[in-house]
Length: 199
Ligand SMILES: [Zn+2]
Image (cartoon, rainbow, N blue to C red; front, top):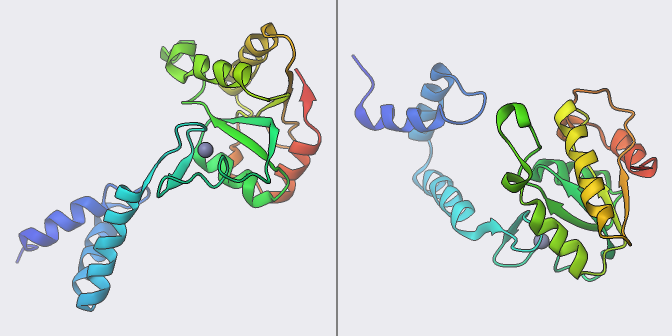
């Protein structure tokens, strides 16, 4: 006997999740089938809600819910310091470290001429406009410690410093090259922010 069509469909969606293979996807589909009606409905609604209520903040590019950005709309944050990150999860990891109270700007990736990714693909002009029009005094570049991350940091530093008045620093890494910010522990991130260097 084969899986019923609805199970096949459900499992095919679970298999799109990171780290979920066909066997796990099938188990998950049967687990949903075994849920109480209310739980299954709540599960389905949670997916719908996440997609309909969460959007990108037009200022920083991070996620916001219900039109309010937890960073940009918080007046207690330091409005003069801007950290440039390349993924939402990197910003989340920095927030969890509790060692940074400024604003963020999400860059749409890292420069990689080898992969055909150039400054115009990353929204660098939007970043420069934000820096030049705002009250920003310091930009901390928090790209990953990889070759592409370094290339991006140096490029940004050069472009931002063309504008004159803004200090640019780079996270200091106790992290090894090639590692990812997202998977770094809070202490390492805290040290990296404290020990940031001018570039
Ligand atoms: Zn925002």
